[in-house]
Amino acid sequence: MTERRRLAFVVWAVLVSQVFLYPGLEQLVRALGGGGGILPRTWFLVAEFGAFVVCAVLWGLASDRLGRRTPLVVVGAAGGAASYLAVAFAPRLGVGFDGVLVLRVLGGAFTIGAFSLSITKLMDLAGGHGRNMGAAGAAIGFGAALGSITGGGLSTVDPLAPLYAGAAVLAGAALLAATVPDRTSGGGLDFGPLLARLRGRPALIVPYAFGFIDRLTAGFFALTGVAYFTDAFGVGPALAGVTLALFFFPFAALQYPMGHLSDRVGRFLPVVVGSLLYGVTIVAVGVAPVFALAAALMVVVGVCGAAVAPATMALVTDLVPASERGSAMGGFNVFGSLGMLAGFLVGGVVADRYGFLTAFLAAGGLEIAIALLAARAVYRLTDGRIFAGKEEGVS
Image 1 (cartoon, rainbow, N blue to C red):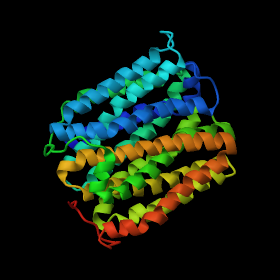
Image 2 (image 1 turned 180 degrees about the vertical axis):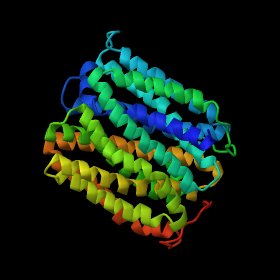
Image 3 (image 1 turned 90 degrees about the vertical axis):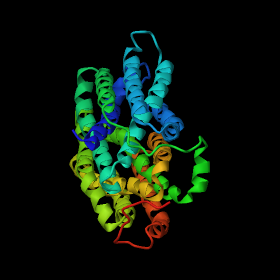
Image 4 (image 1 turned 45 degrees about the vertical axis):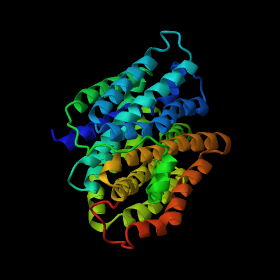
């Protein structure tokens, strides 16, 4: 197995372990003592991603400083596996829902290390930034697709079964990650706040902003999308998982070719035009009158999302030298995790107070807005070229 495939598997493992929980989230939270309603589910997801926000850049900076990433990936995956088991055993040990949320924070602190640094190690490989980020995006998409289907099935057997499955997958990822050599150019960066890094390279705010909104939509579908299909159309966890997979499978299958395409045609069209179409299709899902149409539109959402994700990550790589890739990707994941948090909160709170239609309008509208507001900035970063890209980054 090539290094690219092994690293992609680690990225896949983190995503599949997370998405195992989403289709049966309501039943899982009840089993852990959280009660019903959409807000306990919101806090269950927010706890993990809050840790992502705090810790993502720290892992990246640490890897750049140490000049090594592999041991940190192993620790992150193994720690994530342990945290999943701890949450699963919480009811037997008499740990209440507040304690479960603390365990989720600890788990998030570990798993973001495995996720972010595996993507960074892909950035360290030769072969084209778009292709490498396409491999990462494919792993994310296939992990989410398989996780949504398998997680829905597991939830019908036992609400806690997705936690055990997630722990097993992460443990396997830790073992596989240990076999991947380090190819980082070393680290010469001092620890410092993320905002200081942005002041040094302000152009990074453009892909970071797109990453924030793109992950917001992912968080929106993970929580509010599942609740929407369950409540509005009366589907169970298994069918809700299949419906999520209708988005994630095309999203995954097209990541690699879309990333490669962005190396050839440039980042502008995939990032800007792709985001516009992505936002429109999200709104379309929310206004679909019947389940069959909403499910079909999820496929279109996946195709549009596949155009955006690898090109956005590749744009980060374009803008920094090799010695700063760890912290740059860590920063991207900070904004991405903030986006997931926002997606959980926007979706959960808006849907709870104003209904699902308003929530879908908010999520899709934000995607459209970032494309319109940042189009000129993306155009400048690509040297004013819409149809031609840069293979290597600038310093």
